[in-house]
Image (tube, rainbow, N blue to C red; front, top):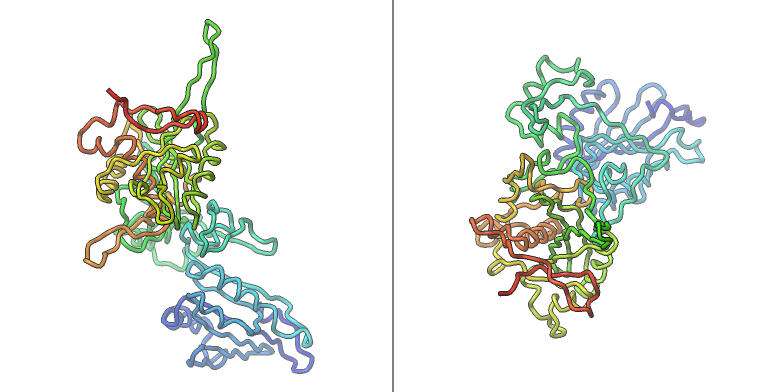
Length: 474
C-alpha cells in the first residue's frame, strides 16, 4: 500500500521505494518471515527473490519498483548494518526481540529514499508487530504501561510517553479467564467474542491451544497480556501474581496524632522495616510495613555504581520523604560488617554516620537457602483468609519482576544450582534480609518469631526518629 502511495518519478514513470524487514536471526527470517512473505508475494507474480545475504526481493509490478531487504538485528553490534543505508521504511517483525538502540538506529534511516531531488517519499516510517512483550521491554516504558525504572549505568533511560507521530494498537485477547467464586483463582478460559481474525482459524482452535499451557504462556500468547518472559528456573515458584500482588498501589501508613480526654497528645506510629543489600555495583533497599500480621511491601530504592558513602544519605532522604515521622527497623547483609580495603570503616559504620542504624540479618554464614526459605514460607501463608505477602504493583517494579521469575537459578562451576547475580538478585536479597530481620527465619522452623523485638532509639547525635531492630536485654 505504501509503495503504491509513492509519487511517480517523472524521469522513469515508476513509483520507487525501498524497505528493510528486520527479525532477530537469519534462521527465523528464512523459516518464518520470508516463508510467509513469499506466500503473500510469490516470485512468479511479483518479481525475483535473491537468497544470498542479506536476502532481498525485487518487486516489479505495474509502475511499482519496490526493493525489500531482509536483515537480522538482535545484538547492538548489528547497528552498524544500518549506517549509511537509505530506506523508505522499516518493518520490525516480532519487535519484542529488538533493543531500543537498534530500533532508533533503523528508524533514523527511513525517509531517505527516494531522494528529495527525485520527489522524495510520499510516506515514510516504521511498521512493527509483536506478541505481548515482557514488562521490562523498552516499548512498554514508552507507552507508559509499566513504571519506568531508573536505568543502570549500562542501560539507557526511556522517557515515558508515545511520540506525537506514533500509533499504538493492542489486539483484543483471544480468550478470557474464568475464575472461581473468590475471584482469585483461574479455573479455565473461554473464547472472547471480540477476538479478531477468528474466521481464519479452525473451530475450537483456542480451546485446543490452552490445553497443557502455563498461565504465563496463555497470558502472553492468547490473552495479549504483558508478562515476564523467564529464561531459567524461577527461585520463588510458589509466587502467584494474582494472589501476592496488590490490586492497587500500596500507600504507607503514616503516624497518627490525636488528643485524649485529658488533653494529652497521643502518637501512634507504624514501624517501617527496611531490608538492605550493600553491593557497590547495585545497592538496593526494600521498604515494608507489617499490619495486622500481613507484610505489605511498598517501595524499593535502588542505585547503581554507588558506594555505601553515597547510598546511605540518599536512602535516608528517601525514607524521610516517603515515610515522614516513622520509625525504621533496618536489617542488612551480614557481610556489610567486613571492613573496607581503603579504610577501617564497615558499611554499617557508614550508615550509622548518616543517621541510619543497621542490624545484620540473623542468618548463619549468610546462607542463601535459609534466606530463600524465609520468603517462601511467607508466600505459602494466609492470615484471616488473605495472603500474608502483599507486593505493591507500582512501588517495587524490580522486585515484582524478580518474584515473577526474573530472580532465577543457574548451575555454578560445580554444577550446583544457585541464583543468578544481577539486579533482580540484589533486590531479592534485600527482601530476604528484611524477612529474616523480623523473625520469619525462626518462624519457618517452628520457633517464636522474635516476639520481644522492639525498635531501639538511636543516640541523640544520629538524629531523632531513627531506630534499630533489636531485642530487649535482660
